[in-house]
Length: 414
Image (cartoon, rainbow, N blue to C red; front, top):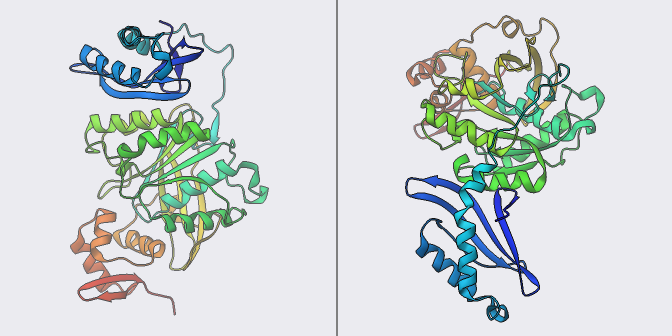
């Protein structure tokens, strides 16, 4: 049987009554009981019947063939149900061999000459590779990766004086699992304006707060295919929903899921409690990503947020100097971005580890306000230490009180 690969499905067509009867199998996978797939039968572009089942079970094939044949109408005379069942049997019998045939080895020759790496965004996002950006909350991960995503999506639309990186323009899909739709819209408008673009410029976005990557990955795969997406940005890996991030099997499933979505991807991750030197989770994050980027930050009260972008793991990129950007904020959010001046952020340039006070201050300057419990959860630091700091340090003040629930902000300069 001659199978044809169409996107993620295997198909077969045969002529019946001047039109094509089609068999289509998707989600082909091996389970303990046998090969399972979603199999659909169609005629002349109309789906007659479908079912997800063990394709090795005859009774399941009988039910699907009979269900489809009932809808053939005028063609039933020249194409009896027994013919349809026979074609379905042959289609299902060779399905697994055809599926794994796509995985056959090839005779691969080396390049005649050395080829330099190609970047979607140099030097942080490799073409055909995965990048993880990590830091504690409040260090500008979402803003920085948003700037990267829009820079790639817009390409030459960004005025030359506002370009922060060399990019290869391509369609970007943002998968937002963290924030509400309005929050993402406002951030996108601010990022667009900071790059010299119209605030209303659009970015292909899946807003699925409250869901996991595991739940929406099928829809994301379809969006990548339908819209010609070249880069997927996931915010964030912690919402993958594929198991405990400290377990190797779960980490491998996340990496496999991202690799299956797009050849080029960018994922936001967090740093573990008490350390900002590596990604929170299993070691296979380091093994699965081609580039891992650590963010450092420094911010004086009401001054720009300095963000150091430091490659700590690379494949084929080579050693790269740290890049430092200055992100400027107003009470309405991001207002501007530029390359930092030498010596403007000495703590970032020297890789000084942030104190708890620095982490809390940076978080509040970006978020505006938070309670001790919210800070403890997002920063992965003991609540008692944070609560004591907020009460004793004059840099922080109460900005909102609702019964026993208190939120703090940064004290405004006199």
